[in-house]
Length: 131
Image (cartoon, rainbow, N blue to C red; front, side):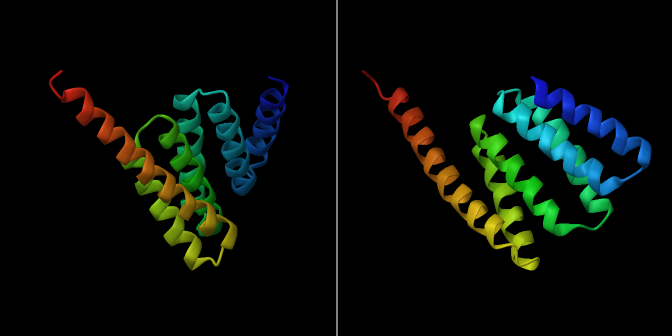
């Protein structure tokens, strides 16, 4: 994918310039592309690296965005408990930074993850019923 190649080149430049915020932003973008390609392990690794940098540089506004992406990533893997944790922390962090867009998206993520969790649990219960 051409976008991934460009982002990795930009990441190399950011690493050499020691620009931590730019590096974290690029890692989040790379993670997003991996998520869209359904390479969830790579996406998780990039998101977690980005999150660590944002926490180190004390940037809760961007931290809430990365947590949101981690929640979506976990939700797509049917890891609803983890998704709910990430969405909830994203929502709480976004409240502190008055980040309305992330607050809305995280709230929606919580609702969707809960609904999917309930559907998943009910389908497991139905499978266990004697036929």
